[in-house]
Length: 275
Figure 1: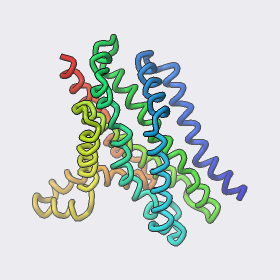
Figure 2 (figure 1 turned 180 degrees about the vertical axis):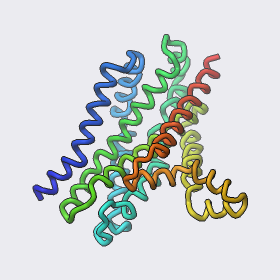
Figure 3 (figure 1 turned 90 degrees about the vertical axis):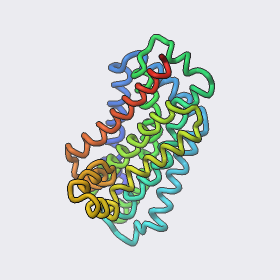
Figure 4 (figure 1 turned 60 degrees about the vertical axis):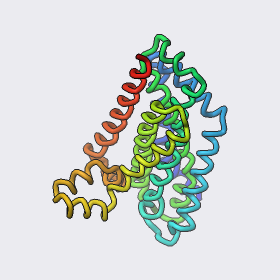
């Protein structure tokens, strides 16, 4: 048991602490004051309301429950948890990420504080980044609290902890992309329900088009070029590569570009509302 705890600390908890420390240092000493102000405001809002706690609890119950009871974690005896655990995580985030992000701008519009924020001496991108980073902390917390499954795998066998960590990185990037999509629609509508529904549908679309039957259909209808295009814009194919431990530049660029585009789109929506 002591060895399992040590391996979990070394390969999972320590990297999380390092990432959290770097993020904290950047927020304290590098991020503009306006971004820090919005970030602190949103963090307090998240963790003084039940939204963050409910989402974290639901995620942990569903992810661990499905993995152990239906995914067959123990029966499969996998070294990387891909088939029994990580392949399911993006499906949870298709719903949970929009729930976390639904209030980013919809709540401001509902309360009538959108005009106040847009008239403050603060650039739209600073408000967008502050809100987005605060919501990303909630998603990070969900994955960070998943350490018991890593501990269990190290206790029962000799898993490939490097690949498992890659699976968590891939899952986090997918969740951040879903959150960025939600940011756009949260800025468009004042209804949180509408924001969630549209975001879930769009997140589901970008995930499902990576399934093999969909790609095969695209190839049959439009040829290999259409098939390759469909696969390239799907999150699933990029997620699978990263989750296998293959940290390819192409896949990382895909996620970061997608997130940047969505945040830019959010700024365009806010500028239209400001004018």
